[in-house]
Image (cartoon, rainbow, N blue to C red):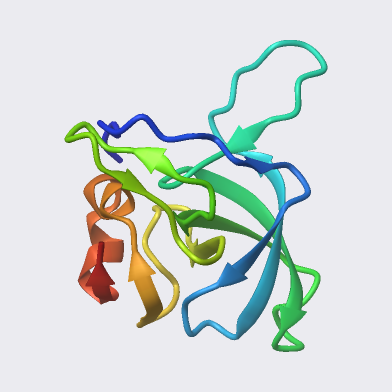
Length: 132
């Protein structure tokens, strides 16, 4: 896991829903906590693109539902700024389920993946069809 160079707006609170973009069988995820978050007392933890979050599977395959999984956020609706000055925003909020070593559990990703997520987790870039 590497550092992210872009100034990413942390737009997803604890409790936010994400689409699951891989082929693991999960459809909808809800953020429970943000891994590595250190904040001020009583402040809601927030996450952005390329952050690792702990999620609960809300919709999807019967075996996966109600499970707690780790996920990496690959898209967010709120725009964020890249060092080149380019501003990036996606149509939806999406994540990919990963294991304890931050390797994706699925074998394919539907839709675009942010470049920042691929820079930080190169294994996600290997199964992505499109990197933006």
